[in-house]
Amino acid sequence: MEFTAEQIAGLLNGEVDGNANAVVTGLAKIEEGTPGSLSFLANPKYEEHIYKTESTICIVNRTFKVEQSLPDTLTLVKVDDAHACFAKLLNIYNQMTKKQPNIEQPSHISESAAVGEGLYLGSFAYIGDGTKIGKNATIYPQAYIGENVIIGDNCTIHPGAKIYQDCIIGNNVTIHAGTVIGADGFGFVPDEKGVFSKIPQIGNVVIEDDVEIGSNTTIDRATLGSTLISKGVKLDNLIQIAHNVEVGQHSAMAAQAGVAGSTKIGRHVMVGGQAGISGHIKIADQTQIVAQSGIPGSVKKAEILMGSPGIPINDFKKSYFGFRKLPYILRKLQELEDKLKLISKDK
Image 1 (tube, one colour):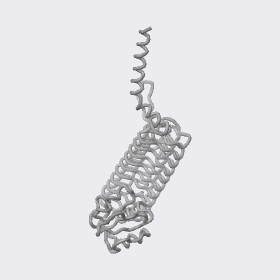
Image 2: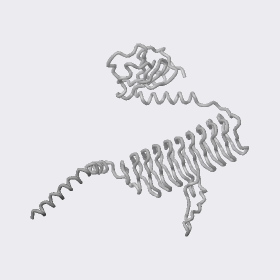
Image 3: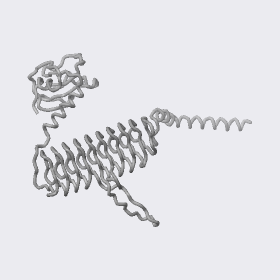
């Protein structure tokens, strides 16, 4: 990557304040900037760093006002939204570093598989019988794609990801390293002696367009039918999605969240880290679940829920305030009880 301030301003519809020919070759946080790096300032909390950064170029909002002397080596690119523009540049950078089409060896593509043009397939990757992969796919080393899988255009499968048979992946999907799509759901039934027998899991997983799934996440196949991850969903690392779950469009979950079987999560739902959601329930559109909360029953209207079991956040805060006062309340009760005993003795 090598850009001048003038080129960056052109890409972002910004204006240069300083040396239009200043060149950057890398990216850095403003507090860690070095000569030749590009940074951005959007959060006022970090403003102090712009006056001592060693970065060569910094993207700032047009509304940014200089309160003291800037480094002589620093050029500003002023834009409408510094955070959004820096994200746009990161995306450009990511595209520039994308693997070029190539099929490395050793790797395996079944004779009955069909792959689109522009494929990058890393060493030791495996594509099974009857699988169909769209255009411009990037499949990193040691990825496994089983039989009769369908993968759309412009997908990225990172190293060591596993996609079991019959799963369907849409367009523009990113699956990060170590993630497993389509492993068996947790289906067992005990007999009269309490011995478990496995219930065959013969469904699949369907992942729609524009989904991103973090590393070491697991999404189980349905017992029958499909486990569904809808369009635009974003899943963090280390998430467990059980069999027959449905996650609605543009919902997001943070790391270590877990969803039990057959639960239906609505659209634009946000789930915090380490939250747990019980099985066979429904979560209303636009619900927000705070980190480490537990949701044991259906949520019928959009609310911000906190605690275990999850209750409306304002109720939780009031309850928590009362909980913190319990030692004081217990002490006062003990004092009252002691006084009552003294009064009883005097009588």
